[in-house]
Each structure stands twice: as structure tokens, then as C-alpha cells.
Image: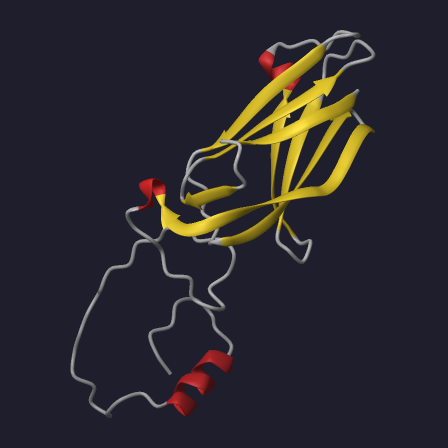
Length: 169
């Protein structure tokens, strides 16, 4: 097996924030195999692996035949990665055998613009590379009897050993 190409779709290399990531992978087979796994890896610009997308062809009932070329497409509907530049790697393997592996062969960008370009996201330094949606709710609000919590008290609380839920210092 050998990789022929990996393409970002559409053909440009910039995706909007939360816009679906679409890639097309093409490979050529030189032997019959039932359990090929097609892999795309997503790394940050320092080479740290963020995630892996795998297509297990045997789960699709697909058999790879010699002399044939195959093309698959992967779509990640709303990737929770923050705007920036990312590296892409691709591989083909079966069992414990790697047939082809191309490491960090290209890059793409996630822009701050959202789908359609009408809105944008703010990138905060130190916020991380993955933006997971979360839901917060205010449980209570009251006057503090001892005044505001000062940074030194908060630091002492954060360093103390925890056993279960804590509500304060």
C-alpha cells in the first residue's frame, strides 16, 4: 500500500473557526488486505499530536484489492481547535505493519472567522489549542462576611490537599 495524495477540501488551506474540516486521502494497493486502517494525524506547530482520525476499512466491509486505487474522505463536523496553524500527517497500516507513513507533510490554518465569515472568535493567549464547549451556572451569590478573598488566601487554598468537593479556604 502507498499513499498517493491527501487534499484539504475545499482546495485552500484555511478553514474558518468551527468550520468542518474535510480531507480526501487517496492510496494505491499492491496486495489484498481486509483490515487496512487509514490515518490522519493533527499536530500543533511544535509537533505535538493533538488528535488522530482513523478509518477502519474492515468495519466498512471493504476489502483492498491489488492494482486498485482508493479514495476516502473524512469530515470533522465542528472541530474544537483554536485558530492557528496545524500540521498534518498520514499513514496506512494493517495489524502491526505500517505500509506508508508521511509525517507532517503539510499544514493548514484555522482562521478566527467563523462559518460564512460574518463572525469571529477571540484568541486568548494561554487558552490552549482545544476549545471544548462547557456550560456554567451560578449556584449562589451572597455578601462575604469577612470581605473579599485575597490572592494569598486563594493560593493557600489551591495548595492545600483536597478530599472531595471544597467550597472555600
